[in-house]
Image 1 (cartoon, one colour):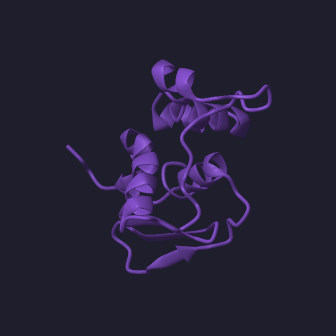
Image 2 (tube, rainbow, N blue to C red):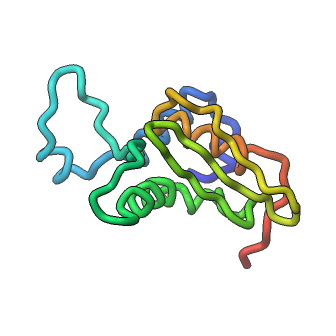
Length: 134
């Protein structure tokens, strides 16, 4: 699915797309112990901010966000960085061809899919200019 195709979907359809994109492959899903209420297993951000090895959370969270790089989320920004501290997300970004450094930290209590949807709103669903990649 492309960003243009997502733009015409409902929020529920987009949230479902995000969950499917983050779903574990069959081999991984088969090895996860699930109860009846845990059927929607997918990759999630590590929101703790705590790590046993320096950079562990940052690398994992970047890999989760990078699952959507093909949609162009990074084409709208000079930088986009998601950080967590004690479960609270903070997004740092600077739009391409703009000078203002922005921080968004009002997403406490949001899950992975909601945070990614918010990032879509700030990037691929925005009217901001984007860089050419060709």
